[in-house]
Every structure is written in structure tokens, then in C-alpha cells.
Length: 376
Ligand code: V47
Image 1 (cartoon, rainbow, N blue to C red):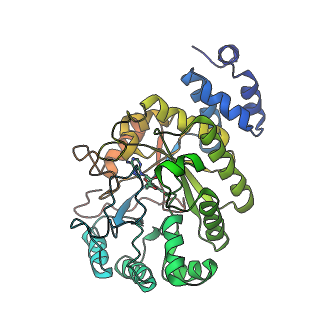
Image 2 (cartoon, helix red, strand yellow; image 1 turned 135 degrees about the vertical axis):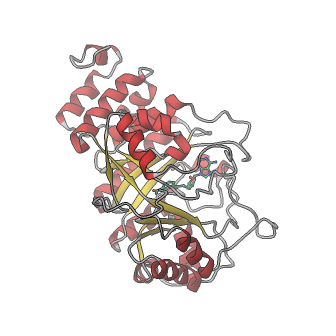
């Protein structure tokens, strides 16, 4: 099926959206609903790829990164999460700043440029802990960019700091923080929140903290967790609110739709999203989020194969080599949790795209001499 002359797009009911995409016009919330309702997945992918090509050509970004989870103790009790434990659980852990530093040192032989650190909301941790952990990482690996703490953790850090958010953000920045990951947004819906994550900050609070971080010079990512009990209207609302805040701050770097994995969660009875939905989320996001520079396919959750296809459905970023990803490790312990640098480049090339190594802030990393005993 060829979309080039637009007849197939007309047949798929996407003619008007096609015209807007060609003209670079913003899509409306109704357009978003129409895209989600469309069953012609390749047609949506074709449109998303027009935007992707315009913005990035064949470039596909990846980062050499390490994930660290400083604690799994969390008081939020989200039904979709297989990572957290309650305060008294014997499986609970908190890494000391020294232990976090040790984790960083473990991979000093690998040319990692980003450390992505998040954890549970653990009210036992004092304000000083967060600052010390950042300093410890920076000391061990001064060149790496620190991307840490979701908006939900930020709300807890401010609570414990008992200071205005703006001051807290500046303290964390002075301790080495350079950007924030996009987690904790889930779905901007009171209905879904009431059922799945009722103890967390609501959507407006998440957006308020993100905007404050952007104003403090800390860019962030944004996510949406899909494939559980959310509906299409809620997803379109989520995308539109992100787009509005991005119009105000310009601080979002990438949007990452997160494919829900029900295994070992309280929602284990749900089937979880299909690969087709994974691709649709990427494509609809690329079309709706016209002011987001990057759309990331998080291969750990989407699988590397679906992610390769996603590079033709609007995604321009694959995340990274990812040393030690814990959030869904329990859910799919058997699957591969890391790809070497060579693997990742080969997978991008196999998909017909051009690999470009980037750092956290999307600066291009120029290839250096391979490190001795390089594994990623
Ligand atoms: O906020 C929790 C989600 C998020 C499950 O910013 C789950 O570069 C699927 O935000 N199945 C954390 N998802 C991960 C995250 C992230 C990942 C990669 C890159 C970036 C970035 C951010 O994971 C949580 C939650 O929404 N999550 N449980 C689950 N069972």
C-alpha cells in the first residue's frame, strides 16, 4: 500500500490530518482521538514518520547510561508497580551515598555519559541524603551527566527539605543534578489515579514541578504509562497538557510512552499492551507533540524488535545501553536487560537508520578510542 498520493490516507479517514501534517499545523484533541480510533496502523506510522524525517532525518539517538535505584522502599503503593516494597518489608533496601558511589565505580571502565537515578518515595530519608548521593556520584564520575528524581520524588524531597521548591531545585543543581527523568506522570486522569495511584501527586502537581524544574534550568523528560485501565480520551488529554506546558517552558527533551508490564503487579490479571499499541502510542505522540524534540522508544519495555520498527513510526531515540534496570527486572527476569554499545548501533543500522551517540542533553558524543575491556 502506498501512502504517497494520499488516497490510502483518505480511505483510512486521515486525509485532513495528512494535510495538517504536510502544512506543519498543530493537531487538535479531536485529531488525537481520530488517530487513536484509526485501525490502519501503517497509515498513522506513515504520517508520524513524515514528522520524524523532517526533524531528524535518519538520525537515531542513543546514550551510554547506567541506571541506579537508591531505594525500593516506597509509601505510594501504586498498583502497577512490581518494584516497590513497604517500609517494614525485609526485602527493602536503601543504598548509602558510599554504596551509590560504589555502583558508579563498578562501570568506570565503560564510557558512560549519563547516570539515571530514581527510587521509591521513602520518607525516612533526610534532605541531606539526596544532596550527598548526587555529590558522591559526581565525585566518582565527574564527566557523567546526572539525571535523577522524578517529579514525585521531587515533591517528597521538598516536603522533607521544608523549603520552597525553587530553592530545593537550586540546591540539587549545585550538588550536580543536570536534568530530571520523565517518570511518575502515569496518566493525567483523576479516574485512573483514584484507582491505581491515589496517594501520588496529581497531574497538575506533576506538571507544576516539571515547569519549576525547567525554569530552574533543569530540563526533563515526560512519560505516560499506558495499556492498563486508561481510555483514549485520557491519553489525548495527557498529550495535550504536556504540549501546553511545553509551549510555556520549552523544557521537555523527550516524551517516552511506557508500555505497561502487568507481571508480578496487582494488575497481573490484565493482558498488557500489544506491540501494535506500542507502535501506535509512539506514532500518535510524534504527531500530537509537535513541540517535543524527541520521542523515545524505551526498548527495555517495548523490546528491541518493536523498538526497531518504532524508528519508522515516529521514534528517534532508543534510550541506551542501560546497565542494571530494576523497575521491571522482577517482571521479566529472563529477558536481556542490557545491550552493548555495538549491539545497539547494529540494531539501529539493521533498522535502516543512522546511530548517533548523545548525552543526557542531546549533545552529540564524538566517538573516542574504544576503552580497554569495553563492554558497553
Ligand atoms: O514512573 C512502573 C513506570 C516509570 C511499571 O526519562 C512501569 O529517560 C511498565 O520513567 N510496567 C519509571 N512501566 C521509568 C521511567 C523512565 C524509563 C526510561 C527512561 C526514562 C527517561 C524514564 O516506570 C514509573 C512508572 O510509570 N512503571 N511499573 C510496570 N509494571
